[in-house]
Each structure stands twice: as C-alpha cells, then as structure tokens.
Image (cartoon, rainbow, N blue to C red; front, side, top):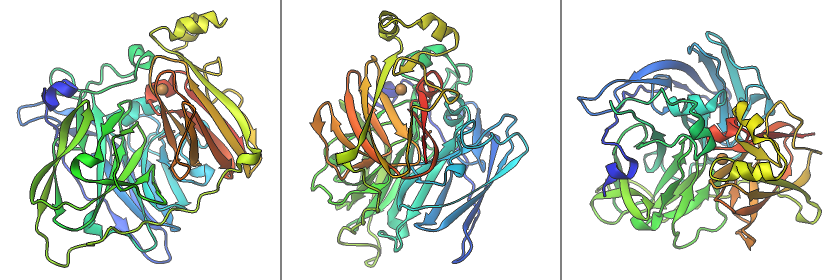
Length: 462
Ligand code: C2O
Ligand code: CU
C-alpha cells in the first residue's frame, strides 16, 4: 500500500499562492482584506485538469491571518461569489455578532456585498476560519484558512512557528475536484463527504523546512469536511503542547497516537536531531506520508535549544458542584440508525423527505427550532453526549471551550480544553463549560454534511 491506495487517488495537487496583505500597527487593529472568489487551481500533475475552487484571496488555503493575543482583528470581507456566504472564526471566544453563522448571528453576505468582521482575540493559539453558510458545500471547495493568535511575546521565533493546514479533497476520475457529488444524500446519511486526496497547505507532499537541533512549533489544523485523521507524533519525535488552540498546562514527555477530527487542531513541539528528510505521516494502522520535513543545519543562532514554555490561556472554568446537566443524544443515519429512530416512534421517512438523517434528542436539530437550552451568563453547563449511531461525529461548540470530563465513563485530563470532541459509534462523553459569553451559539457536528442534515442545534447565553 502507498499513499495513493490509502486515499484512493493518483492525483497530485499544487496551487498558485498569493501573499496576503497585512497592515499592522500598535494602536490600530490588525487589518486584513479578504475576498471570496471562484478560482481555478491546477490540482493535479502537469497533465491533469483544472479544478473549480472557491478561494479566499485566490490562495489555497486562504491567507494565514496572524494577530497578537488581546489585539483586535479587523477583516474587511467582500463576497465575490455568486452565492451568499459568511465567515466563522472557529475556536475564538468571540463577540457573538462576529461569529459568522448565517441565519443565527448575521445575515449572509450577499454576492457583491461586504461585511466587516472586527473582534478581539482573548486566547493565544491555533485557530482557523471557514465559510459558515452552506458550509458542507463551501468548505470542501476551498473556503478555509488558518487564524494564528500569537502569545504576548511569541513563544517560538517566527521561522520556527509553522502551520500545517490539512484538507481532504474528493477528486473525480479526471483529477478535478468532484463538484457533481456535492449534496449527495449518501454522504449526508453516512460518514459525510470523505475525500480521496489530502493536501498540506494546499499542496500535495510539500517539503517543510526545519532546522536541526532547535525547537519548532507545528500547528496542525484538520480543515476537512468529514475525514478524521490519525496522527502519531512520537513517530517523528514530537510532543503535544496544545489541543484545539489551548496550550496544555503540563506537557507529557511522550505523546502517543491521537485523532484529529474535522475542525480540531493540535500543536506539536519538535526538535529534529538528524539531518535530511523525515516523513510527516498520518496513520490508519499503517503510516502514510503527506508531507516531508527537510532538516538542514541552521545558522548557530537560529532558534531555541530548550523547549519554549507556552502558558495556558485563562479560560472560565465550569463550577462542577453546581453544573446543570443536559443530555445530547445522537441518533439516525444509515446502517440501522434510521430503523432505531422508527422503533423509538419517530417517522424517519418524513425526515428523509426533508433531507434530514440525524436527530439530537429524538428530533432533527436546526437553527429554526427553539434552542437546546438557555443559560444564564456564568452558568455552568454539562453536556452528556451519547452517540447512538453507526458513525463517528465531532461535536463542536461555538464561542466557548469545554473540559472533557469523561469519555465512555473514563475520567479525562481536566487540563485538556477543547472546542470539538470526537465520539465514535456507541461512545459517550461528558463535557462541561462555563456559559460566560452572551449570545446565540451553535452546537453541531463538524462533519459538515451531518450538520446540515439534522446535527445542528444552538443555545443562548444571557
Ligand atoms: Cu468550524 Cu460551526 O464551525
Ligand atoms: Cu456527525
């Protein structure tokens, strides 16, 4: 087996890149201009076809936005697509009006129109941004990018602070982005829109330069619409230092295999000792390389010799002694999930006629329904999540980070803060957070085809 048979495609991707425009000063907000366009990308080898993509600033992924913790980020956004869109800032504990959820926190930005996103960023870490209007369609066409919030004094020098933005593409037989299958009910009712090709920073098998003997931070973002990626950082000697943008209070000496669901991030610290090439591998039983680290000798002064410490962000902690518990039962989908709903007295046929395959607490969720719950500002909320389906789901909470208290009844490390939690079939998880951020917040599966077909609900704070 090789990389190709792993993902089922022989195609090689490469795209043109354009530098983002950045204006930064001490008092003014960090300001970026972003435009969503249709674009073309030669996603394959030289003899391959040209793909129709939707891009921010004509780059794939969109330009990396960098801002310092506590600063204000201002994004002048213009929609040059011929369809409405909006931008969500995934993982940022944001001002609700800027959360970018069309239909809940803002009207979608119409073709030709602009919207100014402006908000302060309370946490340093690895975040990302992506379309949040028909996201099941817009994200896997290319509308996503990295949002990096630097520490007050950046813990790693800029040259040793690298982003690996992972995207999963579904390519057709001609090697172009398969646009005919967007919205396929089979994807919605099964594992989502799985691709057959993986890119790192928009490229297939890019070389990532590293310096021998100094510490680097690798910010790994899973920007896929549905694919869960397995990663074993110990294979290339890396340690996990942050999850979903939140630095760990204490870094484990060795980090074993981990899974990165759509939307999740992991920051790794890595000091390569050996010169030469080293594969960046995903594992699914067997490892497959999707990028190559090229380790060279740097100038002697080229970076930290001791692993820099990254302080944890000050997150509002839930008060577990007075937490309000809410169930979140996931049901539905193919492979018996619909039958189970029928046995529970539901009418899955009517659901399916509306393109709905999934239920939260017995009913397809949606933004049009009443919220799952309303919380007083500062109230501690615990979600007891149960996956009664045959598929994996990645439950994402907007505007807050949560502690995973337990997974299948097993207590988890309370220092691990997340904005997205993975539940495989039959898994249960309890997560808790302090609902301190006023507004209307989405709670949904980050398998984006699931989100649009029943796995979306919301809650209100304040
Ligand atoms: Cu990254 Cu509502 O999602
Ligand atoms: Cu799901």
